[in-house]
Length: 84
Image (tube, rainbow, N blue to C red; front, side, top):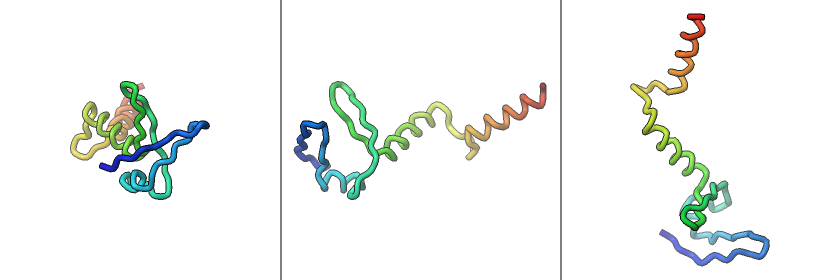
């Protein structure tokens, strides 16, 4: 894990050192999700944030036998519409 000293400019801009950007695969820049946890600023690459959120949701609504939850919902709505 790369560690670097980073200084914030008066205008609030941060420059992330090349070694840190390379470690997360952003040598040319990229999008991050920024959040505060227990007084600490966390910058998480956008794709990693999506992966983390998908995994969190998946534990509450796991796909059964490769069937997506969206497909199941659509099928349920079609069935309900047929009963009206």
